[in-house]
Image (tube, rainbow, N blue to C red; front, side, top):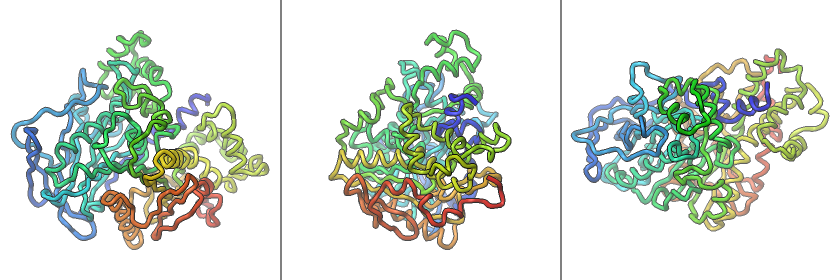
Length: 558
């Protein structure tokens, strides 16, 4: 297994593309949406844009009625000459546009309708609006979904918990995979088109959300995983104005993550061109003709082992410089809430285990040091400094040279979680706190283990000799109505909804403490909130947990 192949397969999106197709957002079919649309409601958008027809749903706990407008187009279909380009405002329409069900999701190879034309498949730039009062002026929560930059849809995020509170929820579609991120940093393939999609949807909110009872001066953008990468990129982007949003929640990731920036997009574009069977891919005109002429299915098949993410230096000016350079000039002062789940990187460990299992007949034959090296490679530190510090922090020499993988399991959890999620989040939080010491930055660690988990993402996880712990995206179980909840799980959902909506409504998440220094404090989220002073202690949360043996499955060898 070549070093480049290992790294590609172990980068965030590569993990997805390599064999867990749809791991993040596969089929959240266990929704608890109880409401059957009873009747319809129409809203005239501002200006001469047109009229939309929606219907009704009910909140999960109190049965309040809310209006839902699903699949409102905010941009022209990005097809033909608009493929890969910045989105264009949707032209006004005559009559009434039905927004009674979810709009077309952006193309994903695991979710293509063979009966649809490419123009229909790519006409996916639409959004959902959920509201309880058309004449109110309520805070707006604008959600950017995750999915490894290659998957995701509004349908996977039912609103029935968040609409218990007096907020308006907006969930836009944005382009994913090659159809969104492929770029040569040129006029024809400018780059960061999906972030431009989000910016256009935010512009739509400014123009139209008041017609749905929303307050365009109180917008909170929030995103999880890849959505956190997009959200934090928008925090720093010079293309973002003060009007776009006034608060931000960044869940499990940031633009400082190793998976959040594509290092050589032009080389990737040439590789994709060749994979499509085209010639002279070194020439810009030939490459453009190739990728513009490919069908949706051809392009998705050719990029199944590619990973995608934002790029630096895009022609649209969204990330004109590296995020650190943008941060050095950061002036906005936006209140931030950011954090991670306790075992946020366990999905990385699981996928790494699957890769090794396909290459090595007996994983247990590897030493702990050998097993760890592939995980270390993700840091891509050519000096070896990161390797040495992580080895010193997480392992003893005796453990490194042993085959005691069960004993090393807590270190594996902390290693993957630190590299992939915790370190990027802590970097974002502490750097912003340093730049804006008078603007609050709240940091949380989500530590509640309930009856449901996203471990395996609706695929079988029974072959792993460990479970997922407080897994990546488990926090969203308590924000979006994707799983039926009972008992303490329902109490946790109430608690999470209170935290997220109180921040959106007042700028202060109920009961949380902001950073006072770059060291802390941070907030542990469970049925109760507890405050701890040393943020860096989260980096060894699994090793330090006296009950970490619960993460092992003793019926399987490791």
